[in-house]
Image 1 (cartoon, helix red, strand yellow):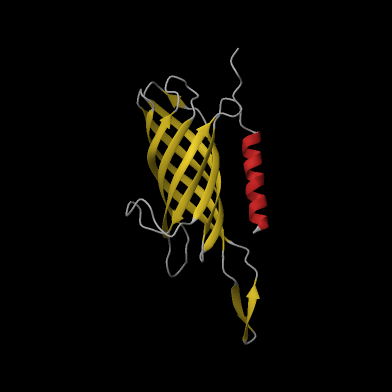
Image 2: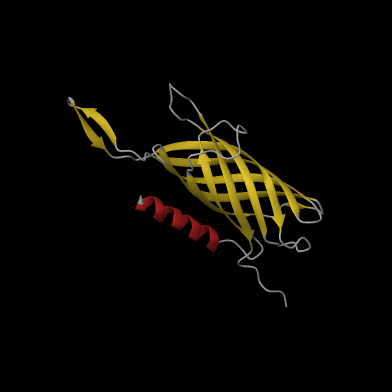
Length: 199
């Protein structure tokens, strides 16, 4: 457990250290669930996660923005798994003049999961506790949501957002269940902590 937390902290520090003042930091907390996408908005019980990332400017006009983003995160699904992931997404925003953003993203990520339960292996006629080195997965995703720019007239305005992310875990259980559908409901903030003050 401490190894996971240390790895996540290192990823966050490296990510925030290498971005410039023109790039934002995005941070969100989310609820993860194993569920069919768009079946319901909020799933229970709650399985918490946290994500931090940044976005890169690519193409932008008065009402449209196309941008790549990267993020790292951690999620804890009680009685099933805990996981660390890194994700690359291509985002598209429609920007209304009063500050509302209609948001969508497609992405592909790498997920490494660890069991939250003690595991055993059958060896020489008895069950022995075994260490968990984790499992590697890929996680394609599709995200939609809403954002609101706190200062609609400013290019680098902070934004609050709510995102509904559906993603697949592959391979899930080879030979039995090839993939598993998940959803994440994010509540987050985009801000510019390294932006230089204009003179």
